[in-house]
Image (cartoon, rainbow, N blue to C red; front, side, top):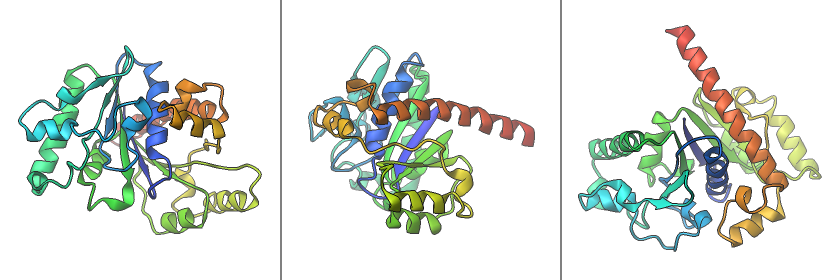
Length: 255
């Protein structure tokens, strides 16, 4: 399974969710790759205690004529992390579209050849595709896409103008059950044409324990597996598997 996690805006929680999903999936699979294609101030590697800023990532290695997996970090026996590399995406080496596509396709192909059974991609802010060309390419290659947003006015406005991919699901993060305005936002999304059918049935609650895990530079699923957010992320990982099977059935029936 190749699962892409992207956010409606910076700070919505794509990296946080990608890290914990990677942790959960690694307990269900033989070999999982947590892959960063996001050049953000709080990247995926932040949650795996990799020193920041990470100057050498997979894109830096490719530019130097080496394998992208020269930048691989082993986190557990079944979970590996591949950072992007700080500031690398804007290098002039990547201006040509053909080079961008070949680079990303080669990366995914080599990951499969190395035996990775699942690839969890942190794509960062999906609204900044002009700066993050890699996320658009991995989006096209992904089996399932999670777009992370918060149940607020900004999320509603962004989704109302967005045409979702058939394999894309909207995941609400930082949800406060006691908030009346958030409840109204969720109810609106449940009836919004073009969005309601793509709304994941599992929302991630706001959780102070998740903030504490971030300070410890670990996925919340690892630090506090019994946290409310961790339990919901575990359910979301299982739901992603179910979505993959549903997409396979649909593609099989249409062929």
